[in-house]
Image 1 (tube, rainbow, N blue to C red):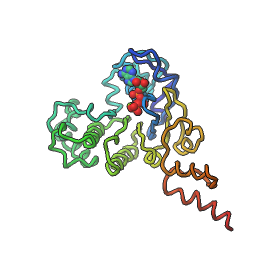
Image 2: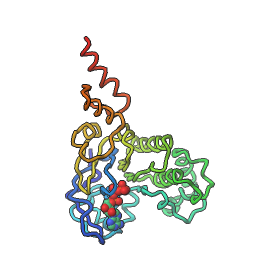
Image 3: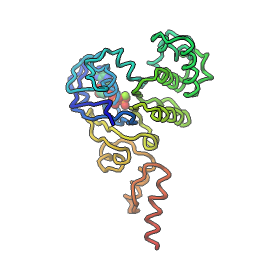
Image 4: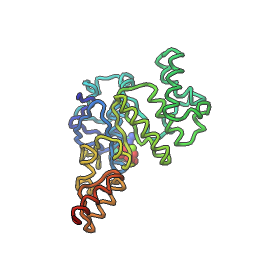
Length: 286
Ligand SMILES: Nc1ncnc2c1ncn2[C@@H]1O[C@H](COP(=O)(O)OP(=O)(O)OP(=O)(O)O)[C@@H](O)[C@H]1O
Ligand SMILES: [Mg+2]
């Protein structure tokens, strides 16, 4: 499979800052993969997203070392607009994403396509489809500024999906949502993966990462300290040293192991716990 994103020995320092907030980062992402970026507050997750979409250094300036390659081309050789077509970016703060020039959710979601000069019939069809997909049809006539944080997060995601970019970079899309709203968003992201999109997602909800994501990148104080398939990373004792959350069931399993309960393997999804326990129990009681 082709690497759609390649980062090589990348370091970055914001202009006002003395220290590098991303330090010698190297990884690559295959086309169509769903990668979660995790790490504590200030670890550099949002900055890394901004490096991938070219805002670092095109917009934020500062000092960038190493290479960021998207779809075979160095990021510094792209125009920002060109990258914008390739990479859809959903902001961490849903209040940053609303354009401020549209008076209804429908028009807000249509805005990007309008700017591209897409024919009106086509715009209407695409927006209708996306409103349904993201479950916000009932909000179509609302002013974007009257929405709750969670509703804005859905509108922000819809406004990006409607543009049909190859790569989705999504920074904490569920921070303002309840568990059901969160599952809805993950369902949409899964659908995007099924449609062949490459997804990078910053998220703190590890249960959902364990369920949906293929790979994890762990950032710690600006360094990429772990990377690999979700199961490998969560099962690796090294993960515990960074004080980042685990999936709930993994936390329970590690506590059981600590008090001497042997487990066959370390579960990362709820439904795996009985199996991890039972197999061991059955063997001991044969
Ligand atoms: N525009 C900026 N100018 C200077 N320093 C910045 C800027 N934005 C972020 N930083 C600093 O860079 C470091 C990484 O910040 P970043 O926002 O990328 O972390 P994060 O992992 O996304 O954190 P969070 O979980 O809080 O969203 C932090 O030390 C932060 O203070
Ligand atoms: Mg952030």
